Image 1 (cartoon, one colour):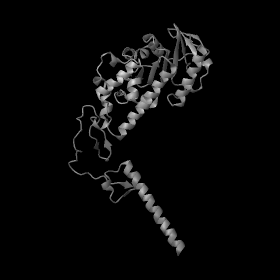
Image 2 (cartoon, one colour):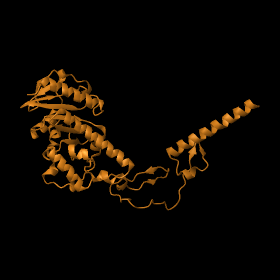
Image 3 (cartoon, helix red, strand yellow):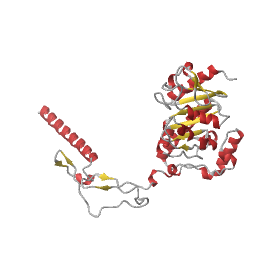
Image 4 (cartoon, helix red, strand yellow):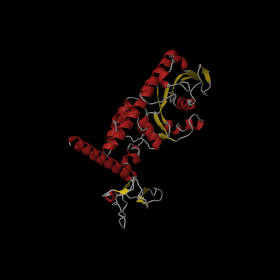
Length: 326
């Protein structure tokens, strides 16, 4: 039998880690634990997870009705209960907004898999649940298809991430692993192309996962290759179809938008049929060579002003030095 007070202290510790790690801000996030049949511990609403006390933790039943606790239970307890009801082997649930992972959720982009061995073993494929209003029953039910597919960590579109396991520490560690992984992915995109592991090597990792007793849909005969992850992310932004920008009469770029436009991928930069000159004008004076800068955009104006200011400062300094020397 679990020690209820010790579990409450552990919830406070996990909340502190989430807060100090930057996974939650202000009163964000929530944590829960299954005590036994019809009895669950959960964090209260409107209390920072970084400063929880055991006395703050609430107790609710199977339907989310509060049984004990001086503070009202979290408004998102139904999300946690959906996980507990769907997965009897799960005892702990953590929900937070880890920044790098939440960036994928806000962008509506799935996290690619088959890249890092640790992620393959401990997380597997991280699905993206559809958005719904937090706290609602519909919101709680958005994760059901992914739970049926044995996901232990799920991105919540435009919201954050939720993770679960048989202990509070493991559930929390899934959030750490996810956010570090997403951070590595974003950094890798800035360096070059991301390379996925070949299917046979992923299968070897799945064999390790099976020996550890960690569930994964791919262990039930699912194909590895088709679960490669987000094609959009792996392709990179440079291969997206982007309509050509054109300049208006003032020389400022105006986007044509993407909808219905022909992709410019692989095509040379189109040149205007006739060269249009947009002189750079500062304080009513045309700057020499301003035409070569391309237009009278705010960037050109800013740089020109800086150059002119530097020139005037140097001129005044020279005159002062000359006067003093005389």
